[in-house]
Length: 101
Image (cartoon, rainbow, N blue to C red; front, side):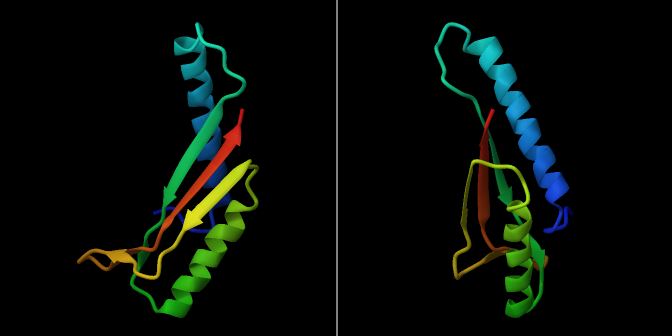
């Protein structure tokens, strides 16, 4: 499990997405005009069973650490009702980050 505070992992995934987008554009989009390429990453975090205060703190750490990553756009959604499974994992929301290459 990647820690919610691991901004190095988040940055590496965004860099990987940009590299993939550049390869796709160069190989597939040669006949089309494009102004820019976007690297896009969706982060679906999961947290083991904990109380609401602890979960809120972990989510704030996630957002703060994403802010340490060089990005052009970030959006996130953490609804009041979390999805969960029978193994004790909670899926509190999703983060979308993108960077122009």
